[in-house]
Image (cartoon, rainbow, N blue to C red; front, side, top):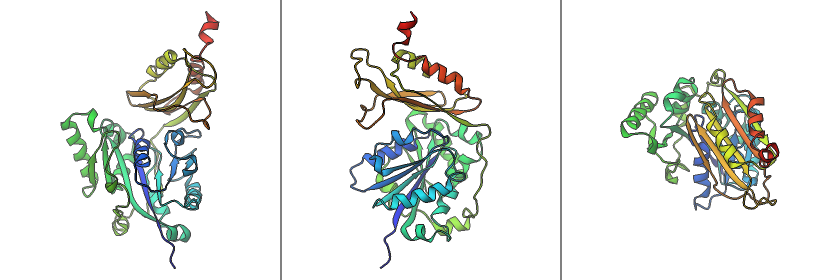
Length: 328
């Protein structure tokens, strides 16, 4: 008897487009499907796995590279490990610097018969940031390839730009891929019936366009990922100043911050803050409390050009709760 194939969707899009937000939307919906998640980050320290609202057993993180090239071998191992967990669906979130083509080809490669027998590519979901799509296109060919490969494009953050601007972005998307289905979203919320088990992936079209042969690409020139961290609780006012000081050439920042509780500084009373920065837009939220299994520490990943890690580490260290009192 043939083994049942597990459907796989690839979630791709530029830095900060809303890929993790989409995953959280899917994972928290009441669909009753056991979903395994593989998440890749550009840099040796990641935070995306901690931003995903799923069981720790259902998420495999692939840091330190681009899933479409430098860590592709790790992707193959992660797929096998995920399938061993008796999941019913697999989501692969690429880094914002990755092209989806080589990732898709992992599930089509004849030299990987075990994966071909057990997993079936269901579709490629590309998230486009309506506010920053022009910036993504200017950074290199990756954004074009993400759209060109898409079976469905979620035009995200549609609430942040006027209608005329949205229409222009849609025109640019259709110029790249006329066949692609476009759905406008706010906070990446889209009906599950256009995301999962759609069967949109067309292997004949994939082969006809020659995407099975595209295995290499150039990352956005000069981009780097820098991670900074701090074990002690932080002052909220100092963190606010730090976040506002992040310059435009650090295009993307994301992190989890441990904010000390002024009213009750006893252990375990600190708060968990999530930081998201894309371009000039910054968002900080206290979405939930710390889980008992989580380490109460702060980690920020900065992605951009010419980042001085030591300088930003010093700035983060200066936010430690209590240090300002000792200095006074």
